[in-house]
Amino acid sequence: MVLPLGLTVPFMEDEPTTYFASRLAARNFLNARPFAADLGFSYSALDRGCEVAISRLSEIAGVPISALTENASRPLGEWLQLRGQLIDPKSRRNSRLAVCPACLEADVARGDRDPSIAIRGRLPWTLKSIRTCAVHHMALVNIPQNDRMPLRHDWSQLVAPVLPQIKALTDSTIRRPPSKLEGYLIDRLQGNADECWLNSMEFYAAEHLAQLFGSAALYGDKVALNLSDDEKYTAGDVGFDIVKDGPKGIPDFLSKMQSQFVRRDRTAGAASVYGRIYARLTVLSEDPGFASVHDIVSDHIMSSFPVGPGDFIFRKPVSTRRYHSVLTLSKQFGCRESRIEKVLRLEGLLPDRHDSGRDVLFEAARAEQLIEREMQSLTLAEAERRLGASANVMKILLDGGFVQRRRVSKGPHGLRFWADELDSFLARILEGTQPVEENADETMSVSYASAHARCTISTIFQLILDRKLRWVGRRIDRSGLDALLVNPEDLRHALNRPTEDGLSAIDAAERLRLAPAVMRRLAERKILGSFTIRDPMTGHEKLRFAPNEIDRFASAYVSLFNLGRTLGQKAARVRKDLDARGVKPAQELLGLDAIFYRRSDLEIRE
Image (cartoon, rainbow, N blue to C red; front, side):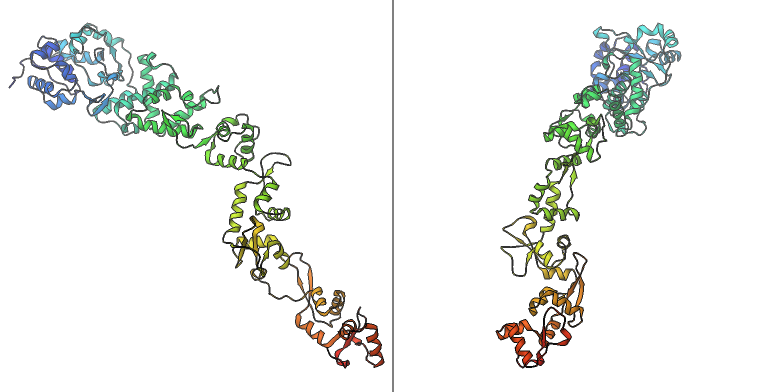
């Protein structure tokens, strides 16, 4: 068991463990290294958080191990862990110390110890990012470095030369409040930092990130190593405001940088615009402590630059594309930029005569769809062949709004068809059709069915699209619209028309073997019953005869011409014989372009 030393010093809550050991050695009139060696532990081991060394110091100093361990840093991979925070070893002060003269003066003023023993270091002073005393609002003063190996890291020996100057340094040192970054880092070491996004990052990453963005905001791409302590202080203050809210503040700042960037090259990307920020984050691309920052900045770059597959962000390949520029569209599709601009302007994505149009970004999927369409656009003749439609049917499709022409350029040849729109229309109209080898007796093409059913081709197409026909066929030896087959009876049913709507004058005249003009005269004189219907195609009224009325007339009358054909004699001979027998023509039918007899007056019967 080791007995505590007779000469000790009190351990302060915010005092680094190595600084405390140095003061304890000075209290016993020795330098730190020989003192530790005499008592059986290594002074440098304290700086590594060695449990054996800390336990030995605890025994001889009468200080709890937990208190000494809390203020001692220990290696954790490539980092140092201090009070639960990961710290970059390069960001820690070692033999080059910085102190607050006012704090040292207050230590001496207590008068309970010799000044060389009374003055103590503070934990925040060990970090290079802390340049201001949070208690006295005073800039820290750098103590000249002592390169003598036995004195390196020996707090009491390194700070002793400034003891005579403490009063003068206190009076001459700059007064200023801690920067926002300094205040945050101190609070975080003490475990009472306010809630903010930076808390999700490791200590060293938050420290470095604020300095990086603050330097970029104030000094651009000026090399960080050339910044003075005062410039770094200001950069930390500004940078903390930028990065503390992470996903909101960082993209806003990057957008501002991009708006202020003077572009000298159309291919200038994020590396040129963001300068040192991009370069430094690229160097840190494998550091998991900066993963969330990489995600935020990468997302912003994806939304602000036309990057896509083939590009890299922070040494990682880009797998998807969000936005295109005219230049990237031109490269992807292998066509002229002027052609790309023409299409985009016609779609309203680029204002007319927009000088900087080549720098505008477009939503990638939409822009690619437009250019693909334009590359696959068809002339009128090509569209007719693709649809299997004649020039007349193509005009009907255009007038009916089934297909549309798009203007891709000015002039008479600037109207084109999009291939995908034509294919979509064709797929919809052929969906559910029954394949057949040839026309059945009751089926016919759309054009013939239109004339037979007295309806427009446009109406038939709409009925097919609306699935209102009971059967639609498709000839396998033809393609496109030319292959469609329909049943006229289905058309009449879909149009709510009767299947029998009477005989036309021509059909009725053929049935009675009379001239059509005679049929019309018979209808006018009410001798033969008739009615009119409205033609659905032209809107004109059409004369119709009921079949039963034709049969009634045929059973009551016969024309001289038809009577002669029945008897096999010439009409003049038949009339002479009838006159000789006293058979007179039907008086009610006189004045027509034909002579009629009542069958009841004739002795012969057909």
